[in-house]
Length: 507
Image 1 (cartoon, rainbow, N blue to C red):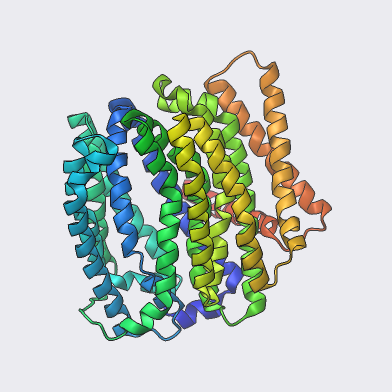
Image 2 (image 1 turned 30 degrees about the vertical axis):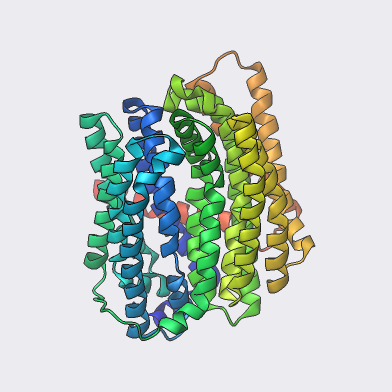
């Protein structure tokens, strides 16, 4: 299927809905494996095991962010990308991977000075292989995004995750220590690299022909990517330096659990947003509609999952992770609500990139890093209290989202009243959901799995009922709620086809 065929068949909204369905399906399949893996590993390994690997991954991630040079975005956005563009991007990836791997290996002995754990050294030196393998991934996979072939990306990433999942679980059962996590990470990356050449026929060659052209755009994406990573790691660095490996493990698991529901639905949608918006970058009306639609999806999903996870955390932690993780319950609540706000940043940054002004996103991101660093390190070192740290983090994220939305809104013609119209229905519905669940829990005399099940069912019914009721009252605007209805209708159609085939076979 070529680009022209794809573009000619459906419009931007359909591209977004179709691509998002594939990518959300992918992320949930991956998270299902991740959830099963976490449940198994949490019972086989200790918080200290998770903490050791988390410490190493902080360092690895800090160096790996240097490889996010933005050349992929430059190629996706380029209307007439040639083989020279793809080959130049691949060459940059290889050189960055080799340099980052060497740097991680060389700094590994110094990690024990900050994190106070000698075991992090050898773990880091082993994980130095990951960026090297990553650098050799086939750049031809970018054709899937340019052609909006998200079904192919689904297969590629799912197979790689499955390899990592199987390797990690088997090794954890056999080894019962943190080396199972290390081996799983490396196996997953090796699978990604090998599969990239199996899944796409493009064979890149070393080239520097388009270096200056690619770098003129990607430089600012690169700068913002570094800020984005640091913003997500400021709290982890503060916890790692001010507390123990066990606290680091608890915080890492709490953050992963809290961010997973929101991230695994919204971020796949955002990964679709950029290539679709790039196709319509010269159509201001379509860009505005795509941005508003993305904002609506992010708010609907973020409000429901953020507040919903806070409500069910007490029962969920005991049942899923076990009694030894109960102390992270209050952390999950604050982190989940933070996630529901924080996801709005990425759609705004993607819009600025498509408009060719990534420097604005870079400046806003680094301002966030500076404020978070100035606030969170003192809190961590003065209080050594994880709950106070996450509350501080939530307050800062809630305040700093405003300038990002204002800047992006002005560039695509979205006024404050438009933001208000997008915000009020999801958060009113979330408030009604919280009131219903908390009221029911006041009269229930049991806890555990029965209460968790009732909370989830009641929360979903109240949230969706209130959301769609408010949408009807508002005059059924062309918004994200309309997409919710489209998804239900499409699901019913698919079920109808399956039922008809089953009946036909039975006869």
